[in-house]
Image (tube, rainbow, N blue to C red; front, side):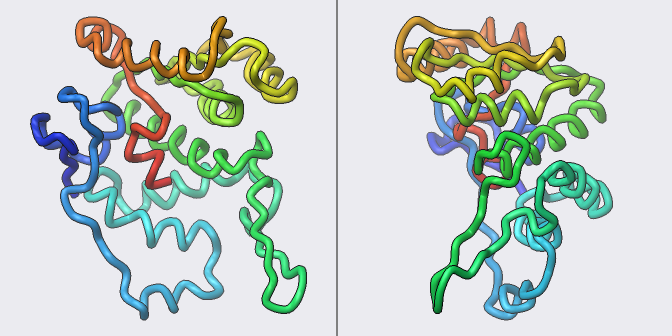
Length: 229
């Protein structure tokens, strides 16, 4: 599986290269060169399988040969190991034909844990294989930052800097971002709005000298791996 920029003027990359690059150098977003599909039989066969098994089947075609089946299975297993429910996202029946999907069983109680916990493990394995280290920057209005810091705290191949608008996130989210003691995660309060944080983020990604110097990467929705997860 190869990844191309939506603007068509950036190098074609593998899954791990696109994941570690984030925003394409032509300002576009990296997306799959082609989109795999699942047959009705494939989808029907998922009934009764675990969340991890379904995640593997859905995401495996997008990963290509970046990871072996065994590696990807292990990555998925580690990603969801800290969730508070064995089903990860249990479906609770409230009434006849009325169901509720619970997405709050992750470490920060936000649905974004589903993506971030997986991305953390994907980054760790890909970077350790390369013997490399990257700097992740992100902007948040609350739950993305908490989930990102929780997912990457203590990982040895990543430094994380999350920008959030001062006084505009909940107290719970602020504490989730500012109380971890691991030296590789940092929460930075910005005197402004979320849009101001996002603007600073874009400026960093558009400064290619800075971007290359610190090996900048992103985990916001500009990153295809985040969308996939």
